[in-house]
Amino acid sequence: MTYCIKLRRYLPLLPFIIPLLCIFVVNSSLFEDDPVSLSAAITFDLLISTPVLYFLTIRKSTIPKSTVVPVFILGIIIAFIILPSEHQYYLTLVKTWFLPILEISIITYVIISIRKAFKQAKSDNSVDFFTLAKEASAKLFPKKLAILFATELSVFYYGLMSWRHSVLKPNEYTYHKTTSTRMTLGVFIGLIIIEAVAVHLLLQSWSSIAAWILTGISIYGCLQILGILKSLSRRPIAINKEAVTVRYGIMNEAAIAFENIKHITPFTQSVEKTDGYVHLSPFKDMEGHNVLVELHEEMDLSGFYGIKKTFKKLLIYVDNPDQLIQNLNDNMAS
Image (cartoon, rainbow, N blue to C red; front, side, top):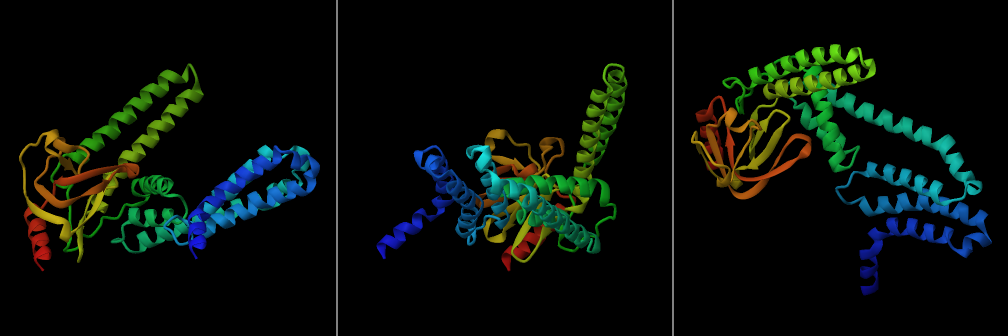
């Protein structure tokens, strides 16, 4: 019994030990004695045994099952590197017949998942697309890659496809109507366009390729700012039965449970960096604040591209601060 328990502790290491053993065998005298049989066995271990063991290791964890695909591809790469070219018959079969099918399957699955999120967001204007994109991406990619993909997808969606105005619910609160943020971001877009035209004309005589590359970067920069600007009105602060989700477009977000809120009060005083305050808005003092949320325990503020910042005292700007504070206090009391 004790032996079985100890063995289970080392099972997660097996997917990593097998490639090392395969590398050792290829570089040993054993491989020279029977290269044909061992090449087939090594190919099977790297392409089948390793991904299967990896799947069995992660199946009950929060790691996306789709990460089996990168493990499989890594096995192919290792096999191509360590096996002599004359003993890569099975690898060639996989590369010729199986990889194209796998690529088409992955692309199809990604497109279907994204299309489903787009349709759900368009059919129900109250559904938050960024949340849908993160949920869909988490099923497709590892955690860090998923948030990058979801952010880029949301920039595209809010910048180019989301044109209907959101209808606020009684438990939702805006934070962009009475600030200069929209005007500031609009000015940034205008400046980028003017600069892009000027730089394009200057570079055109030297290199048209460089001119168009920099113009493309400028266009993408405008799209990012436009996506952020439009996400401000599409992602309001929301209160549900158990928590308040504070948002600043697709740039910052945190779901704060009522039980973790120590105080929520009106607050417009200027603060110092050393005081431990964190702004919900990335524009900080340029936008200002009128609400302070103090917590019992520290938590993370999830920022742009998943960058996290720990906070215990959060400064927020809300268009109707008194209404938000009253609603939150009522929910916390009940």
